[in-house]
Length: 407
Image (spheres, rainbow, N blue to C red):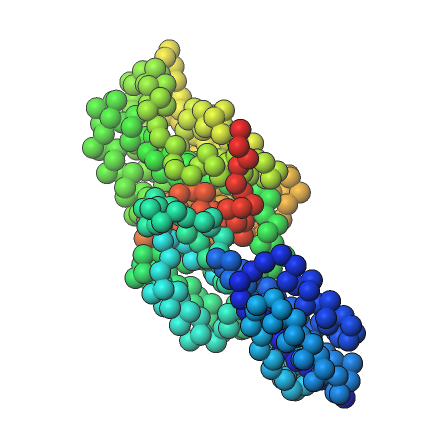
């Protein structure tokens, strides 16, 4: 009867190790049923589950492998594996797979301990852990750096809303972002990314900045905050705020635009998305003038926002055409995806306010970015500890894959 042997090899990494070991195994005509290899700080871990041609070959194979291991200065462990255990493992391949992404300025043992325990308590098993962030100099750890680890899980989730709530609560406790996604064909096949503008792509709320120029900053800011928290209808709040801008000269638009700050990570994110061929769109409850400015600077494919009415160089306090509110953002996202030939599962939506929730809810990946509590609790994912380029990790892209070549 053919035997199953798990071979686990550890030691310092070097060129040709895998080739050398498999050369030995090839002489015995073994089958490789499973194989995995990782290198952490030049330390190798190589595992192979092999099937011997006959039971009598097992001892000879172990001796031959041991001799080669001794020559290479490594350590090996052999575990005879019952056929029943293998069949149970093989039968588990149909179980659901999940991705949990841990993002923080630095990753600690405490964070991984708490996350791992939550995973186990929900009946899931960790199959693989991979670092997506780049190597960090010691002096940069915990400062302005980025750290990201991706966990591949297997098992059935009995109560997904409850698991998401647990991850949200845990993320607040351990000062990290925890993102859960199903590991399906769409995970690395997103094609369209839609962004809110104010407090997402830029750090400011444009209407608040315009209001300061008009001398009504306090009144407008109060309405804006209530709207972002979902306490007042967005359409009505926008009309009230724009009415307060009546009489402001058109030149104020350019003056405000010159002072706006791009959110950290936005430029790297956009250059990467463009390089990889993604379509990008601004869906904003703000104003088209500023959306167009961002389009020229960062290269967005589409911009949909609100148009201020201007007469004789003066803002009239009214909006031209349909207001881009939460429902219209969702409708536009679906329409653009259809026009480009993408499914909604292939879309990503990013925003921070209550009026972003409709598009976050229908997108394949909805991300609340540095969002208000009501948005964080309702969105599929949230990102708070990193810049906008942290979205690349949620897309499954490592820093090595997205690193810009030297100019």
